[in-house]
Image (cartoon, rainbow, N blue to C red; front, side):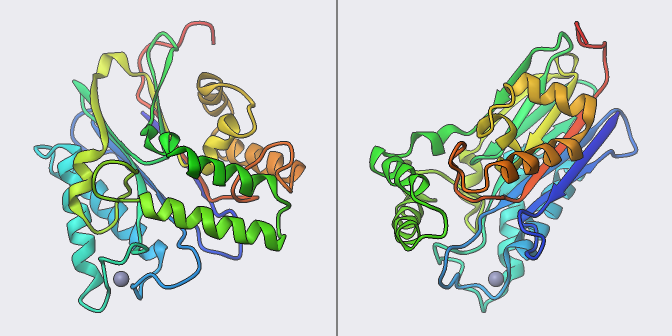
Length: 291
Ligand SMILES: [Zn+2]
């Protein structure tokens, strides 16, 4: 069993709003990993006196603890309980009904000798490698299915020069449109872990026989840029790169690509640099064919 993880803020002067952790409990062949990507609030209030790192540390710590110690609870039940206990930790001074209350994307994986269970909510990614070397991605694709007018607004933002007033105004409009869809009732938008435990049941979940899993790789969207934005290779190539070079090298490669295209002209993206995190777990088993 080998676990390699790296997290790096997009801007070294600002706190990293991603969260990564992993545990290898002492009994059996089990383990768990958790990766969160905290949603950076746009300008304006959040109704909360706590910051996003406060939130992700509590939610992520609670989720990892529940996933490893409460093996009788499903991962979505663990997430629901972690959301509830984190909501209680805010205290009565915070308005948790505020649409900008601290919130995060979630990847959680738990394994034992028999099964590998997974949960994905919002736009962080999980890659699962089979013993033969094939890679399956587990994605919550709701964000890719945003209504056309929102996708049009996003493309307009990305086409404008970074730092220009026009881009700022277009970005405010796009952010407002996205906010209206986040955790909206009725199933038309997308969901993040905030203060409502009910969203846990909307996560993408599943389980795989342990014998069919050789390695796992969880990525925040800042790290997934290697494939999704910079097109260095597909998911299988990304996982092969991480196995060989490590998670720190993955994020270094993303930063290099970002610096080479500082204004996003060749590779349009929301922010020049984003918080980037990756956790790679090699569960063991036969070597993949061809490596
Ligand atoms: Zn708070």
